[in-house]
Length: 240
Image 1 (tube, one colour):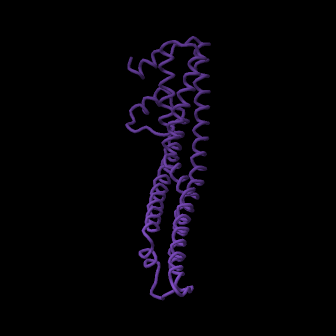
Image 2 (spheres, one colour; image 1 turned 60 degrees about the vertical axis):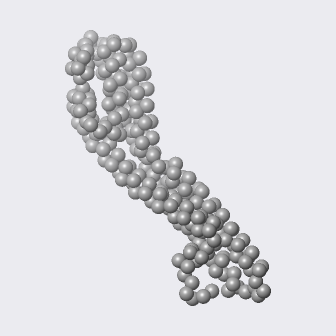
Image 3 (cartoon, rainbow, N blue to C red; image 1 turned 135 degrees about the vertical axis):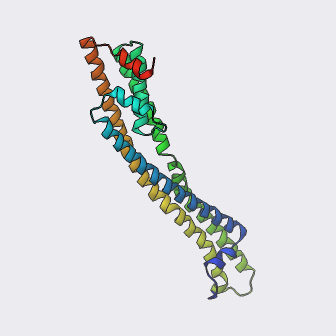
């Protein structure tokens, strides 16, 4: 193998199909790193916002006042949005004087919907990382097989078969496998890491939904026992 031959030369001298495979793998690697940085920032921000909202929620402030503060927020997300949709349903059904069990069931449904939608936004990009991690090695292997096949076909047309004549073709083909692994390994590691972190956030949010449902259930039960009417509060919050 000539000393002047380097990785750049191997890539530029590869067959057209192998170069296309390398370009696809390079794009896949860049895409995975873009997703990794975005998801890292998104999960970190979501965790901080959830912690801030939980501190506010458990500060002892009245839920109606908390709802008014959340209602005025232009960009609700995470637990803030989940609380908003759940308490909105509570006020709507409470205003219609629905039975206690129906109110709690409606709130639980809305909380589950809000939780699912926020989780979808949180996990956006995980599917792409999983696809890159699983497919990239096979794409690289395809490029390697094709390159080695071309190298041996070229070898069969020469009068003297030597290692130096076939080594460059094999080397340029193996670069495709290396690039496939280079794209796949970070994607797989990031997928496992972000899946674990998003699952932790989901469990924390699901626990919050259960706690909020319990609070509203106790409040509704207390109202039915003491005969207090919460209609004025609901009208004040909703403006109706």
